[in-house]
Length: 132
Image (cartoon, rainbow, N blue to C red):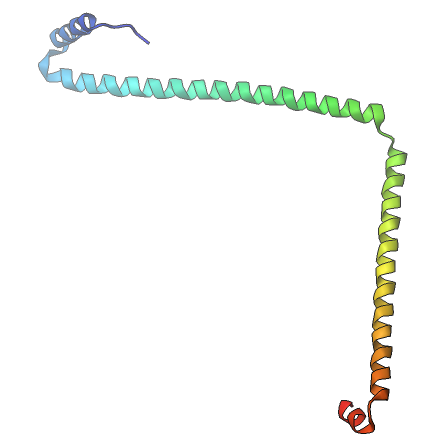
């Protein structure tokens, strides 16, 4: 920040010693250190805010650019009726698959019931009674 050499710093200390005296100089140096620390902290905070604002502005521009590109893409090649028809076709296919699975499941359950009844009826009479 400041380009102060040893000789300039020595001159400042001598002047401060003459003006403030040896009793008040340590307190003044502490206060000056605190004030400089606060100024540095405030300066860093301001820099961070400015950087965040620039990043936010850059992000807003990118989002707007992407939104514009998406809108152009949608306007150029999007056919809502065709898209809706595609969704409806997919829904019909899924419903048909579910119905087919349900039918197959019911048929396999009824087939297993018939097989169980057939095995029960072919068992000897004593084993039939044990089953019931």
